[in-house]
Length: 60
Image (cartoon, rainbow, N blue to C red; front, side):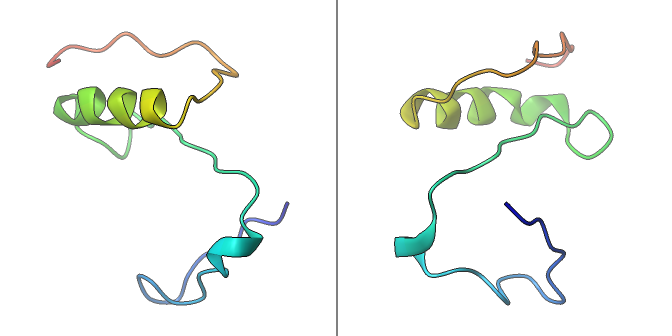
């Protein structure tokens, strides 16, 4: 897998048919704790596997 930075939002996205994996990251430095429930709901819908412990945060 190769991670690349997009020059503009939405640019350079792969063909959805070629996507075989998705990495969801909980980043305290980038996101407000108020968004944690949405992240966890998305992970549940995708039947995601946790590869590291979730960080306990306030604001949920």
